[in-house]
Image 1 (cartoon, protein in one colour):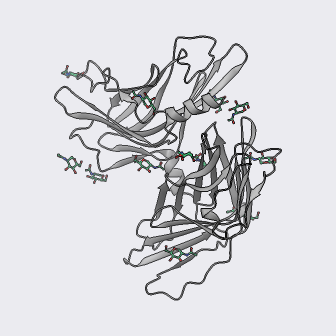
Image 2: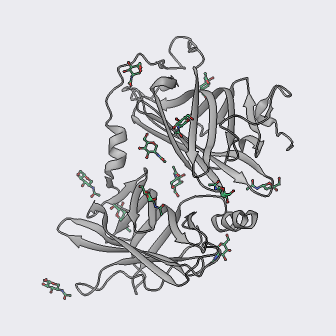
Image 3: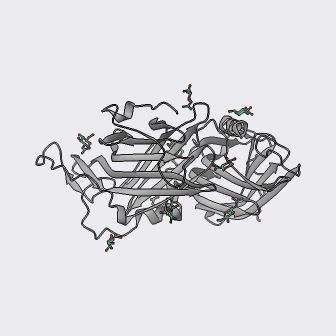
Length: 386
Ligand SMILES: *[C@@H]1O[C@H](CO)[C@@H](O)[C@H](O)[C@H]1NC(C)=O
Ligand SMILES: *[C@@H]1O[C@H](CO)[C@@H](O)[C@H](O)[C@H]1NC(C)=O
Ligand SMILES: *[C@@H]1O[C@H](CO)[C@@H](O)[C@H](O)[C@H]1NC(C)=O
Ligand SMILES: *[C@@H]1O[C@H](CO)[C@@H](O)[C@H](O)[C@H]1NC(C)=O
Ligand SMILES: *[C@@H]1O[C@H](CO)[C@@H](O)[C@H](O)[C@H]1NC(C)=O
Ligand SMILES: *[C@@H]1O[C@H](CO)[C@@H](O)[C@H](O)[C@H]1NC(C)=O
Ligand SMILES: *[C@@H]1O[C@H](CO)[C@@H](O)[C@H](O)[C@H]1NC(C)=O
Ligand SMILES: *[C@@H]1O[C@H](CO)[C@@H](O)[C@H](O)[C@H]1NC(C)=O
Ligand SMILES: *[C@@H]1O[C@H](CO)[C@@H](O)[C@H](O)[C@H]1NC(C)=O
Ligand SMILES: *[C@@H]1O[C@H](CO)[C@@H](O)[C@H](O)[C@H]1NC(C)=O
Ligand SMILES: *[C@@H]1O[C@H](CO)[C@@H](O)[C@H](O)[C@H]1NC(C)=O
Ligand SMILES: *[C@@H]1O[C@H](CO)[C@@H](O)[C@H](O)[C@H]1NC(C)=O
């Protein structure tokens, strides 16, 4: 199993960062640009049982020579991405009236590739496909930050953080965007009715900021294929600095209210996601496993929210995928009773209070041995395995 983990870790490079691809015609003119994160879940058989493997489109996937800009009416633009031991993902485009679409998504995978499919009882190539998954207005870039799931026989493909445009005329992404339905939902949700603990002020000119009370500690968990894989207790506060319409700076401090917070998430062998949504605000914690060191850590935090109406741009998003926080040995829990400030970007801080987390190996839905109170600055504490 350790070998499997390492192989998967090497293949993913641990990061699920998005990758950029382009297709050019024979004269060198770019006709398709794509920047996307693609997660795969594949079910296959071994002699013993059914297995599920989860992996991402690696960053070093290559644009196959079958990719093309299409020839007038004779053929359509197509982007073919090759990766690993003989796998490929194709996006076949078509246009109609004022729209273009991914007419068909095709995934070819090679069950003989023991790196991804150890002990597969059958070898050889498999193909699955799905019609019309993405549609956008001609002359606009398709943008979709949220996940889009495509379920096929034995294979699920999840696209996220997608920027895509086909039928490019001048080789660059269009300024105008077609936003996917998944993203529009999150920006048009109703204004909250609960008295939330938000303060909005101009630090430069406004009255002295009044600190909001500490957030209430919420208890969150995620269940994976092997039971509970994320157990997290914490109070959660967001601190966002933003530009107002009058060019002054505003501050949005928001406490998550646990009983109004919905949690979801998912885990695979090397990463775990905890997705917390409170009203129009979402914080996604991404944990990763360092298999060699047998440690888990917080690798990424994404924040999305809607700012008060005086904000110049009400939609706010921030992501940091190169963090290394809340570290602890697998089988143990990370605990900190003082406040910790997780810097997502210059504009966004996620403050966690009384945090205790454990990822992956969780015995009986209870925290393992904890490491706390030894150092006052919890963030710098790296517990020893035991
Ligand atoms: C892609 O990267 C993985 C490890 O990160 C490596 O094993 C593989 O050979 C690379 N593939 C190509 C085509 O460069
Ligand atoms: C989306 O992709 C862009 C460009 O690759 C990257 O800078 C950004 O961090 C990604 N966002 C998320 C939420 O992963
Ligand atoms: C695909 O997703 C569905 C639920 O949406 C799930 O039932 C199925 O097991 C998944 N298949 C794979 C191969 O992950
Ligand atoms: C493409 O088809 C249209 C009508 O369907 C025709 O008018 C046009 O000449 C065709 N273009 C080429 C290059 O074949
Ligand atoms: C391409 O189009 C965009 C807007 O659609 C424009 O900003 C840009 O200057 C154009 N580039 C060239 C080389 O024409
Ligand atoms: C972008 O969309 C706006 C509104 O529909 C339109 O007025 C503008 O011309 C478009 N810009 C480009 C570069 O297509
Ligand atoms: C969290 O744990 C409770 C009790 O064990 C369980 O009922 C619930 O489904 C779990 N939630 C998730 C998201 O796994
Ligand atoms: C919020 O962030 C601002 C700017 O980074 C900082 O000055 C302020 O102290 C923070 N407040 C809290 C409660 O975190
Ligand atoms: C928050 O929870 C309270 C009590 O359960 C409920 O009355 C209220 O409607 C909830 N608010 C939202 C926005 O869900
Ligand atoms: C589930 O447990 C099995 C057996 O210990 C292990 O091989 C597999 O990696 C685990 N899966 C996850 C997602 O933790
Ligand atoms: C987070 O959860 C919300 C629903 O609560 C869902 O719409 C969204 O797709 C989830 N995001 C991720 C990255 O799982
Ligand atoms: C994993 O841990 C080892 C040993 O502590 C370290 O050298 C390596 O950089 C870590 N890898 C990641 C991805 O953090």
